[in-house]
Image (cartoon, rainbow over all chains, first blue to last red; front, side, top):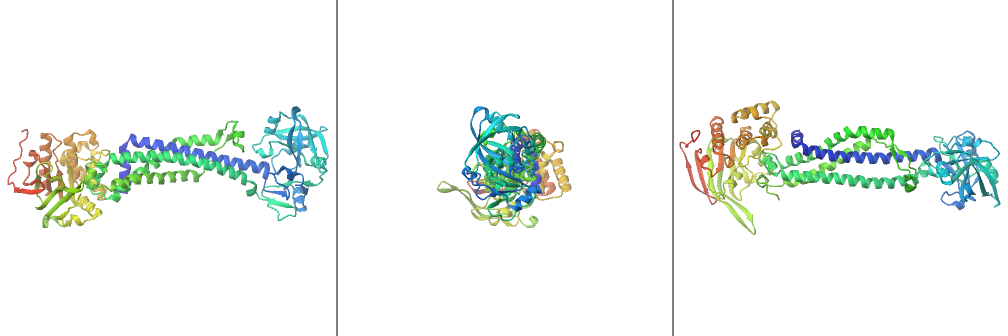
Length: 391
Length: 242
């Protein structure tokens, strides 16, 4: 109790020096929480987008299908097993057939993935309802990036060529019925979504599918012959890995910021403690033990972090709350540079764990960097400390 | 332990050596001395004679190299750091030439500090601090910081701080060295009054004639040895204004 009282007294007495230290430290709190919150918000957004637009509650792949090997598309399809078919019937799953093709937007030739999906599905957010449109051509929906890179817009007709299961080439015209906006690149770039039945006819693959997307909360089926069940954790592993690598990068910044803050505190404490060695000598002469001196100065340093947390709360909470509500704008070029799901705006997410963890980590680190010089000075003989004799 | 039953400090064959280069420097060479309760005594001598070293050992800030120093019943050489701190905390007051006030504390807080270490209750602390500040004539400066005080006032705060816990002995190392004559006499008179009123033992280390005049016992230290130890029946106290 005495140490707390004296530490508070010392902090209050130090005036401007205390406030400057606390202000610098509060900026570190703010930057760390803001940056980690941004990463967490990004992480949550990316996962949500991927789940809502692509993976649902899990997927069943044809056993020969490998999304990273386009050659498997030729053989990676088969009749939908009865268990999955009944789920599709009940609206708890959606079959997707994938085929390779070429299309000719604005006179250019470009490889494309043709994806067939049931227009009535509601398992993922692909606006498949637009595929019900009938105007003599096959309706298609494409993502915003696909539309932007190919110069397509709603109502445009474009020729699509493909090779059916027998190796015969054929071509037809599809009409862009809808351009949808998504941040999930894996359902957007280089893909055209058309009605499942149309693609099955084009490929001569009746009742077949490449994969089946399960609805969220519907549970995973048991083992299926010729099909493999992929749970959400597996399907999110690439994005998790990416976020993890971004988090490591973020942690480097976290550590760098902490390091700078701690260096500032350490410097201040060293300067302060060694400048105050006469004072410390006098305190020892008045009867303070070495332990009490160490406790006092360690606490005094650590209290900077509490004060800094309070200061950071004053300006940080409103600022971060506004940022969380309005989102943090990301430059449009970020998509290509990051190569993953990046929204135009990221809504940072600040969990209690993040805030309390940051406060705790800074408190402990500050205490440690304060302890080191305090321990050094407390080891001095009082007679030398009183004379201000630096060791 | 009870100061009234025997000497406050008993030094026998006290030697203090400090390492210096490959050898050592001997600051005290076999001191035999006793300081009795209620004395107003001073160790007098030229610079480098060992006065401060002697006071530091009596004050348990330092330890003897040889011989023994028993202060308030405790052998200084055998005390742990904690025991030495405890002895200083409870029984010894210090006054230094440079005042050594805690700069970020107010006058009140500086004087209160030893009582905080003794974990005295708040009310008891307040009463003792105000009483002591009244004694040194600084009741109107309780909120001032040391930087706002004159040298004389700082030293009066240091006296109040040394006396507030009613120690067995106050050790004053050149307390007037940084003060003008008027302030020196003012604080010396204050200490004499305290000695008379509270029975506190005062031990000075000084070569200042102004202080020496007030002493009732003068221990002359030269080159680490006591060369003269005389009791003055009637100190030649200075008249005001001279």
